[in-house]
Amino acid sequence: MIKDAKRRQLEDSDQTKKRKLQDRPGWMACRGCPANFTPLRNLLEDLQQHATADTRWYLFSYDYELFNLDHGGVESRILTRIKDGRSRDGDDEGTPVELSDMYCIKCGMHAGWQIVSEYGNEPSIYAEKCILLSEW
Image (cartoon, rainbow, N blue to C red; front, side, top):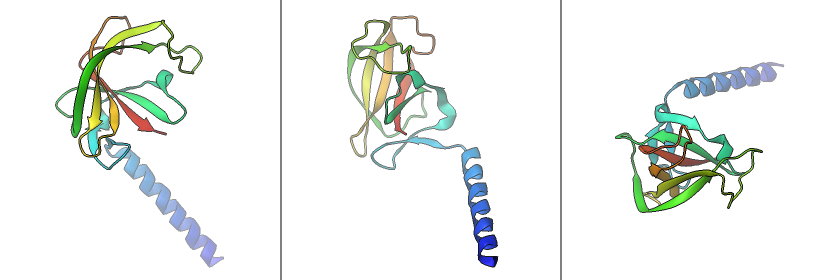
């Protein structure tokens, strides 16, 4: 009985610690190493319509608070609009966007894309923002 009470007290303490950690500002980090990319306070939107089974996309402002990222070349891509919650590669309904791949400078893992310019009317997707990836 005393052991059960002590166990419950420890569990409650763990839950309190988790809540306090969630209240503090965090960082968007690399999926392959502990490198931090940007503070979560710069998060603009969770792009749920582009999520896959194991990866989530997040839209961040692209400003001076990005760290540990390197860039690849610029190429045009189409970000498809998702109607049923599933990604459709090759779907021609979407927003044409010029993107530059971004990589972690510490481990080389693909981290996301810098939005260089856009041509469509997607309200939240435009230049001076970036999309960073996170695992579920």
